Figure 1 (tube, one colour):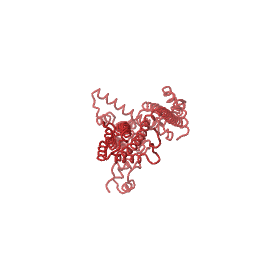
Figure 2 (figure 1 turned 180 degrees about the vertical axis):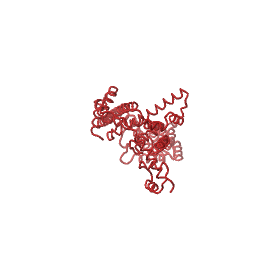
Figure 3 (figure 1 turned 30 degrees about the vertical axis):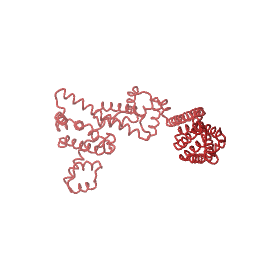
Figure 4 (figure 1 turned 135 degrees about the vertical axis):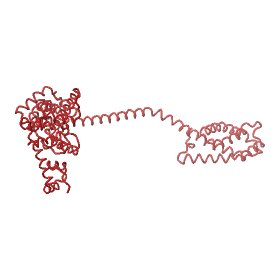
Length: 193
Length: 258
């Protein structure tokens, strides 16, 4: 464990609240990166980072001194992001039901696809990234998080399982399903390029 | 070999496949699977284009500024005093020591109370112990006297009237002590002793209360009764039993406890 992190934690637990600021400054960029990749939204990612640090502060008494604070707060951020995505999905489904639309996930995916422009237009407008983001958003929260951690954060299956609180094999299956869905969603883009 | 499945290909991309060597060999040999694998790699590589918006160097400070007002100060100084392992251990040790001390003190108090009550308690059980020697001494003495009386009665001269008065007096004296002994024997639930003393009682009662005195006829009748009941034999057996019970070095009959 980083000695600076360890010293800061000891100071915080001894009553020096300001020492936590050093930990926030040191790890906020990493947390923002993973939060953004999971939520797909800057504002949401910033909220997730704040919530993760708040949760971390409240749980700091239970933090084991042998552990790595960076890894620990990273997992908290993943959980926060996952909760955030689930909550947002719930809000969207509620809104869809209020306006008379189906909240079936499969239909939602199709609706997202229909709502997007065709591949030619996307290429022309330079919105490939948006389509990819839409494809990622079409995944379930767990699939999306597992894929982001595996593909973008280079976490192992075991680390993904630990971060999500699921078995490694379940994490592996989540990544597999995510890749399959993404490939199906991005097939039109492949033809266009 | 069968074609590589999508799951195996994905595992191969991330280097977490279960049989990466076999998959790699198949990809080298199978053109169709190799094309599919290359397509998968291109698809996944395309997803890397998604860039994360950059945060400036002061981003962390802004995060801290936004959450700092929401965070309470840890009051660990006080908590640590309680939750410190050493203090906890000392606390447990002190509690154990207190418990042991209380148990020791309670034991002492109880012991003292027992000692205070002991004289009274000792008197109670000693009463029968004291009584018993008295009974034994009386019984032993009584049986000794009775044996002598019976021997004298057995060998009494039927023609002589000189024995009348002393024997009657002795019989009366023995009758009184015999009743005491018989009552004690009954309380002690000793059937053998009780029976023998009953026989002796009848004999003594007749000897002491014979209206015509101990004449030859009366003595002869008493001798017959004595022989019929085997009273003398019984008295001797009882004496030997008492002597055996008391032991050679503990003979209260001879100690003169009375």
